Amino acid sequence: MTGGGLTEGVEVMLGSPKKAIRKMAVPMIVAMFASSINGLVDAAWISGLGQDELAAIGLLFPLFFILVGVSSGISVGASSAIARYIGAKNKENADRTASVALSMTVVTAIIFSAIMLLVTRPLMMTIGGASVIEHCMNYANVMIIFAVIVFMNALMSGILRAEGAAKRSMIIMLFGAILNLILDPIFIFELGGFGLGWGMTGAALATAVSLSIATVPAVYWFFVKKDTYITLRIGRPHFDKAIAKDIFRVGIPASIEFMAISLAVILVNLILVSTAEGTQAVAIYSAGWRLLNIVFIPCLGIGAALVPICAAAYGGRDNPKIKMAFMYSLKLAFVTMLTLAAVLFITADVISVIFSYTEATAGLHSMMTTFIRISCIFLPTIGFGVLSSSLFQSLGMGTKALLSTMFRNFIIIPVVFVISLNGTLVDLWWGIAIMEIVGPIIVLMWSLLTISALVKGTRRSDRGEAC
Image (tube, rainbow, N blue to C red):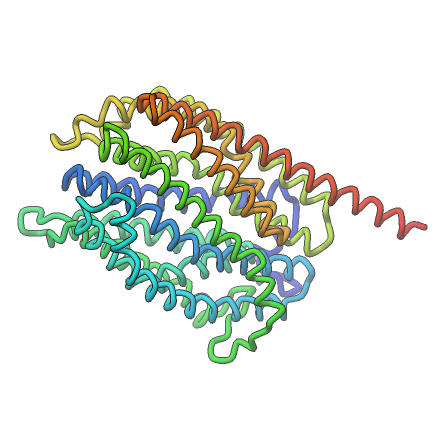
């Protein structure tokens, strides 16, 4: 810690918003990039097993988006609340919030696993996975059993971000990603007798084991070395109803956001399964979005940095700083995504080989290239929606964040449905791309109105104090 009991991360977070965005976003981008590469590598390795296995992963994506969503919901809710208390210089409540969140995480993970073990198989059957159900369950059962690790990993990262320790959050995410890259081929394939050859089960185990080991450094920092700003307490977290409500105010809507996205993906998958291309369409869509999720990382990293920075400013009643941080983030995201869109468009034909390098998936190459290139049209505006949701979360406006996310995702469904009746897959990709532009622009307008109201409120307050 530096002078005054503040860590370097807290001082950066409470300082210049532009500098804070850059210093906190870069480690998050690196960590998220490594984590998303895992998803892409998983898809690439699994595509080597066959098209059915790749389709199974696509069908499972909404389910595990819910897993990530519920765990991230508590993490984001806790992070926002902790950062607001830090901004208000209330360390006692910041510590208490972290400890309450820890207890909530363990209980929620156990309940989640129990429910998912019961509903996963019938859910997969309902959304069109009958032909690949065993592949689905081989992967799903492992991840459900290890859900508590996913939850704990997300919470530890969130608490570290809340106190401005973005580099440490990066370390645990990067560590897990690198481990997974190493374990994936060993667990999935036999590799001439060297690998274990566990197929889909091996892919899930590689992820679970990697996350388990990656969580160890965070446990060491909080409970052994004890050099973090936040003090975590186990045993008696002094449960506080008001603090729990504060976490849930952002955490529940944040979790529902992920579920809403999952539902939107499920509906799109159902529409795609009903088309003439069937599982091929699902494979293209799901694999293509795995790639796009990697391209979205700069926006997600900037958004992850924005939450604690704006939350701390809000806790400190510095609303002009919130506006400065948000506008700078928008500009940074737009320029970055515009550049990436150009690069992706040019290299789409080469990148598509990742998903079509075997005889079983070679037929996907041309349509995958088309999907990627059409998607480039909406990349520059994707940050408008992501950063608006982050802003609402930082201000404790979880319901607004939820509504903005639902609008951006569900506006796509009727368009896809109408086009699927008479259009081609290319028409579907164009419909999705156009709606991915319209939705974020409308949500951005809402967020700008919210900031304007905050700043005007500050000016009125200042005039009142002057009088």
